[in-house]
Image (tube, rainbow, N blue to C red; front, side, top):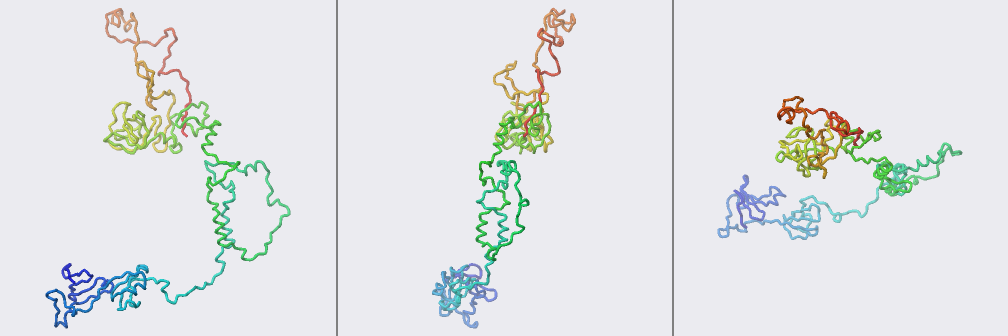
Length: 511
């Protein structure tokens, strides 16, 4: 064999043997596998190659090997894998060989400690083994039963009855009074019909000649019990009465039918109890006939965000952030349209709270804003979060738990948007503005005609619009008096421009 130096003072031969210069014994030789199982089993080379320190055996100068006649017999251990004890005993093995038994959990490992591999005691276990039943000597052929009684096979009747007390047969129809109804399942009970149509029946206290007691019948103790099999079979067909029965498990009949909320709503609407006004819609109610829980007067009153959450969810959106680089407001799934009027609850980043802004260039989750429908977008300077309102007729309330409904008192409604064909005196189409736009009363700019011969300023020789006003033509201020009749009736005047009207009470649907 040849040796390879792997480090200073250490050589290996590739077969698991190692030469090492030990600090105490000098040069020693050992096998790593044997050393792992049997520590300190190395060979001291000075004991092999010296005779009380008087002679030294040297390697053959030609082959570089030691003469074999001076070396003791060495066993090179091998490892064998077998699947039974018989296979291990039939191995051709030498002392120190390892047998791995795959038929034992672990698997089991044995080392041959003697010269005869067919002799079982020569195989010493290296790992914990678990004996196989077939290998156990003097094992019994049977096991006698232990002391017991038949009571352990049974539930007592009391135990069974207590269990059955909380159960019902699934084959027996469920009484309607045990059903938990919900908004989709409502019915009238037979008990109510019986109460309406029949007088009360006699109870136990009114029965004549009833026995005072009931003597027990002859019995034995076996009849006090159900077997566990009988009880388990019975319980398998039962349900706990504490668990609500789902409506899908109920068998309907001609006197017990479920109805849905949608059906009830449709029936109520057909009977006049439904509302034809959409949520957020405004209608007249001069006699206060509409329920106050569903309709509120349009007077800017504050109402609860939680109680009227469905309407509030239509009115507001949450601003998650602002992108200053693109001047875009980020609102997830905002649903806003180009030119829609909105207002914000916060000030900052280029936005002023409660100011009306127009939505510009919207995408699904963001948009820009402008102070007018077609002007440049607002320069946004920093990210902000908060709320916005999608219809500027509504308000933020106290900013936490309430919001304001529209205020329609004293003003006229007008259709939003631009008319498709009718034009104003200027030739432009009539435009009511975006939804929620608040217009002011105003009149068309105009001039009053002055007829020739009128006195300029009421004074002669001061110049006027016409040459015959008593002097040469010159610029002057003309004052127009109050309007007078031209023969078609006396004009009316006041502090606002308005058509004839009648005052009505508006209400908005909030629920």
